[in-house]
Length: 134
Image (cartoon, rainbow, N blue to C red; front, top):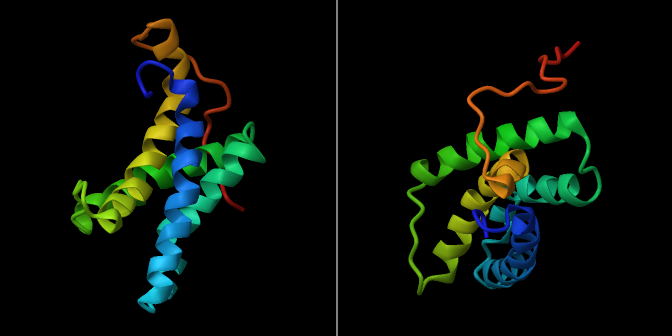
């Protein structure tokens, strides 16, 4: 999906996120681990959904989501030693919530280049001046 239809990456993410989070809550609630779902990674998933469906053209939120997705979520893959264990739903869900947001943000940023098969050496970008927090 990432290379053939990058515009559909967000839909794939949403389609997988909802059942996996419901299943994770049910399993974690039964094991009394449900308070682990207050972790930053889960807030990042909610923020990603808000960005994708409520404010898709908000530049500041887009930059924040790009930084969150490619920063803490990517680092957590290595730090928590997430792995692809196909027969473990817990490990697959953990890998999913850490690896898919960066791929979605990557496809949102570079998706038009994939679709056109153009990869420029240099590209002018609008409104890329850093915003200072006052």
